[in-house]
Image 1 (tube, rainbow, N blue to C red):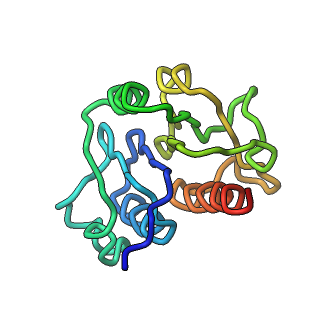
Image 2 (cartoon, rainbow, N blue to C red):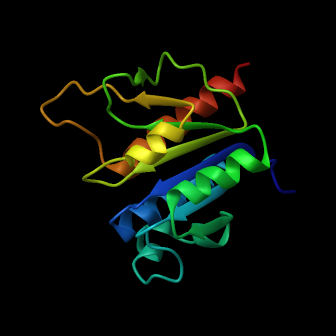
Length: 159
């Protein structure tokens, strides 16, 4: 019996590393999310490096490619009442622990160097950040995906 998917879509905004994409596929499978949108320069199946870290999750996670991340955001906004929440270190971003996540939800994760594009940030309903306590300014994008997706699950499974 297949478990009901969580009403979470993950949108990858121009992710450079196919290995990060594979790791995110695996996280999306583990969290049983409903969709993964791969946008812009983000590698998509059958890219030969994705299976190294996806370990079969390409077969279990529904995904779609969009040439432009803004098109993916627009498609979501037109299709239902999904909130668009970008994960990015901005001055106005809220700490993700303090944010009240509700589903349906789309989480946007950005490029490893440049982050979520300005256009997508402006189209977002909210921006959240993961607090950094060490010397580095950010986490790896695949790690960030896992951290935030599981915080969303923690919140929605207790309400």
